[in-house]
Amino acid sequence: MITPGSAVRRASAAGLVLAAGLTGCLVTAPTAAAAPGAPGPGVAAADAAPAPGLGRYYRQRPDWHGCARGAGDGTGRALDAAGALCADVTVPLDYGNPGGRTITVAISRLKATDTRHRIGSVLVNPGGPGGSGLGTGLAVRPAMKETGARYDLIGMDPRFTGRSTPLDCGLPSGPGLLSAGSDRAGFDRQTARARSVAERCRATNGEVLPHVTTRNTARDIDVVRGVLGERRISYLGYSYGTYLGTAYTQMFPARYDRVVLDSALDPDRYNPRLLKGADAENERAFDGWADWTAARDSTYGLGRTRDRVRATVDGLIAASARTPLTLGSGPDTFRLDDSQVPALLFTELAGDTDPVRAALAEHVALLARAAEGRPTEVPPAFAELLRTVFTPAGSALASAQTAILCGDAPAPRDPETYWRDIERGRAAHPLFAPLTENITPCAFWERPREERVRVRHDTPALIVAATGDPRVTYDGSVALHGRLPGSRLVTLDGAVQHASYGVYGNACVDATVNSYLATGRLPARDRTCAK
Image (cartoon, rainbow, N blue to C red; front, side, top):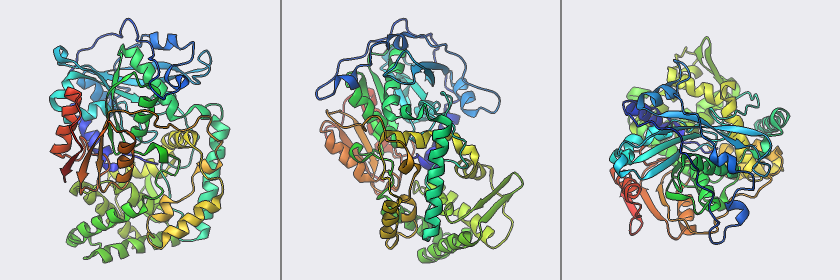
């Protein structure tokens, strides 16, 4: 359940707005596609070369068209305003049976404007899993500065997300983990919920679930590369997108150019329990937010010290366990219990900038009003977050995220494993251990058909990580760097931040990434950037 978090969502939206004034050169699809490459050292041929019968997918000519789908499509309208075009690329559902059922993958392309110095295409993935990436290339364009003009910026909705062929299990709520609450009864309710999600997905989409995997998304990326006419494609991935990037470089070692992995996952530890062990980092992030909020007690009224702010939050969770807290009114009415309030806190603890901390403080202040029985007016952006995370409006995103995580690697089957982990973690991390250690639908999912991706050969990637990342802890990036001797690690020291490049506003990080994207040369050594 790794997502870019609210900070990245806001940055992406801002990036789309800022990029709306860009223009690009619009051309048709290439006349020929490059053939898949040969496997590199230590990579199985079955992973590197598509099965026979895939040529028609690589040779297809997409029908490029405008991106907007009506007046309410903000992403599409921003892409159109920037001069981008969109298309649907056809790929096989099952790469082992290329003559069988097909699905579509939605892509966008903003052409390079500095055509004289054009480098190639860079595909950008925002993470998730399950996140739409159609507008992400456009969102990072401002951070790339003059380097961005030398690339075709490619957005892509991975299979079964966004505008690609859909997957929706009809779930009662959106993506992400909920908390197990304070007692065994709460955990038993979460176990029943997880089993129900697995059963519902199996009943509604059982035929496609085995093919909703990161490996297949990597194969889709290579088809997109071929359709674009690129011998090699560059890649920028955030969070879960770093695992997808690792998958692509390992499966297609002759087909990538420049690779940036921001907030990286250790592929050897990748599994459906992605947040296991992140409770300590999230508690530290919470303490930092509590200190910031206490210094502004006159604004938020949540307590004048860290301990008082924490006591306020603990009281809100206890109150929500007795009676769900009611926020808003009319169609925008939301009721949050003790499984959801910690999840909301976790969702918004993705950074340490003033806007990120202020948003969480404002929302906790609204919860405090609700606990007192006072009416609350929910701002539109907060209502959209609550709607996506806690109501059926987020079902499609939750369905895709769950299917990818469960389809990539197996999870423990015995609910008692999760309960023991929760009880062990609760003493030191009472707020977040019941969430990060909680059971997921993967405990009741069919076992994956393929193994998760293993690092079998070096990749000269640029890895970016913040030391206080509460989503993908810093040691994941360090571990991936160790598995890739030719890589370089850029550390944003002292920052509590998930996703740094183009999001946090650190000049050192952004300049280092841009220099690499422009020249293809990694820094001579690892680099540390001060917060």
